[in-house]
Each structure stands twice: as structure tokens, then as C-alpha cells.
Length: 462
Image (tube, rainbow, N blue to C red):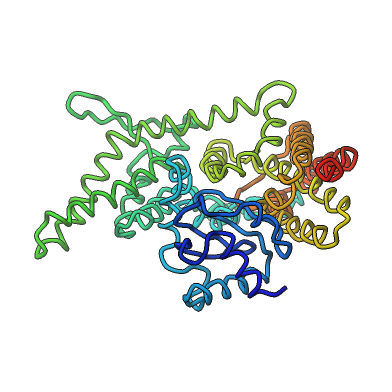
């Protein structure tokens, strides 16, 4: 690939250097934020033969280039723009520029993602440890009571102290002092409050506190998400405003004192209990949807999850997944997300086998590979959406995979990884792993066969 030539084409087709506000890249895509999106030559951008595709999403114009190539193209773009690429994957305030071009809904979902994505490695690790514990117990490995207690420490700590992690991440995201978020988060799960899981299990009662004649039941916030996100935002917001009015000589003491005192009071007695109810009801609503008769709920999620991905709203599912893990101990959404991916993957591979043009065939395969590791945007925008029936066949494949997940009651021990890496979340038994692979195989084979039969390539070219 001639990286300089590709970079020049990209810059020309998005309206020239003066129309580029900022640029960065991820593992497979060059992301550009523009001054005026109307200046993009969409058809020309999609027809760059050296890349797998182009699409616009969440205020960004994204060119699917591929692993190992995108960094070189980004470096050439940076040179042509007169910027240095030495700083890494981002130049300037790319995230702020991208936010400016988003809708309100996209901004809310993106904010959730910014807060939760840094926590994914911890939650993945917890899920893997849960799977390992299940596998060892399945193999009848003997454990002493102390051994099980230590294993519980490994598997339970992240969720027990999840509000601490979320409050820290949220305060950092909103520009406050993260240490204050840690302290408030610790107060939300302090041992002086009744443990939320013990209360839910009936082995403990809520603490009743009378405030201005109103009796408020208090429980801990173990495993909760929305109260912790609010806590992080409120701590940052409060700290920033207090610093404007507190004299500098007293700021070091007065600002953190008032921030923590006011924040924890508002959380415990006003907002926190309401958000606990909202989060619980939201999780129960998802459970009710999945419990629809004949596996309808599973099939719908398997079919539609990648539609949600196209809209950029799929990051919000992380909140639901955490809620499911917290309240039920398992995550039935994970295999359904994988089923949806596998359906689209099968359709894309079928398209690649049908294409006659060698460059387009190679690009289709290249765009599809990242799906194996849970990244589907290159496949969706670079292949399937260009051949409308392929995307529909992928949805049908996803729904079949969802039905298989329903029949065999497939559920993950964690979240954050899908497709091939997701296998690690099903290691509690060989049967669980085999059923997970059956979900992938059924979705892939269904969409592959249907796409080959319908041949969208011939229809589109015709």
C-alpha cells in the first residue's frame, strides 16, 4: 500500500486540510473530525480501493484501513496536516472535538463508555476467575474453607467495590479530583451500611434513618452503576463550583471537606435510593424481555444487537450487563452479542467468497478478521451494509444463534470480551464452552448459507 497516496486521497475526499479539525486512529480505523461534514465526497471516500470502507458515526468520519496499516496512514495524514504523529494515537483534543459533533443521546452513551471502558479489564478478570473457580469445582478439586474464602476474595472484590471504581473513573472523566471520588465510593459500600446483597437475600434488613420526618431506608451500593456514575459527576461538579467561591488560603481544607460531606449526603438520602430503584427495574425489564416465551427475546437480541452497534449506542449495554452480573451472577447478553457478531461475520465471509474483484475480495476478508476479536465496525460498514441483503442475512443468522443460546441456556460469567476471546468466560465446564461454540457455529453457518443463496453481490452489480 502506498500510504502517502492513500493519505492524500482521504484528505482530498473529506474537503481538504482546512476542513480537518482533528484526527486519531484505533487498531483498524483512521478517525477524523471535520469542520463541515457537508464537504465530504461520500462516494469517492467509499471507492478508495486500498481501504476496506468509509462511514460516519458519532461525529467522526472513519476510514477502515486495517491493523498494521492504519498507523502508517495516520502518520502520513499527520505530516500532510503539518502535525506530529509522535504523540501516539491521538492529536490534540480529539475527544472534545468529536463530542462537539454528537447528538445528545450519543453524548450520553459516549460518556457512559468513557467511564466504564477503563474498568473492562477488571471486570473481564473477575469473570475469568469465576469461570476458573467453576471449572475447578466441576473437576472436584478439593478446597478447604480458607481456600474457597480466598477464591471468593478474587471473584467478589471488584463487584463489591464497583462503586469505588466507577466513582473514581467518573470524577476523572468530569474533571474533578479522582481521590475524592474514591472516598465517596468507599462510603457508598462502607461496612456500616447493610450489605445490598445480604438485604436482597433476606439475611439483613435495611437501615432506617429519619430525615425531616421522612423515614429513608439505607442499604449499601455494592455492584451498582448509576448511583456511582452520579456520585462521580456530582463530586466533580461540586468541587469545581466550590473552588470558585472558597478563598485560596482555605481551599485545601474547606473544598474537599464540603465536597465529600454534601456529596455523600445527597447520594445516601436523596438521589442514591432513587437510582437504585431505576437500575434494578431496568435490569428486571431486560430479564423479562429475555424471558419472553419460545426464546423470542433471545432471538430479537441476537438479530438486533449489531443494529444497535451501527447507531453507536451499544456502549450502553455495558450498564445492563453489569446489572445482570450483580443481580443474577451471570450474563446472558454476552452470548447473544456474540451470536449477532457471528451472524454478520458469516454473511461477510460469504460476500468475500462471492466477489470476483481480487482487491475487493481481499478488503472484505481483511475487514472481517477483526470480528473474531469483537470489533465489527469494519465488517459492518466495509462489507455488509454495502450489500443490503447481506446485513439482513446476518441478522437472521444472529437470531438463530440467539435461539440456540436460549435452548441451551448459555450464559457468561463476565463481560467485556466476545467471540474468540469470549471463550474464556465459559470455562466453568466443557459443556458450557461447547454450547457457546454452538451459538457461534449456528449463527455463522445460517447467515453464510443464506447469503450465498441470495447472492447480494450479483444483485448489487446487476
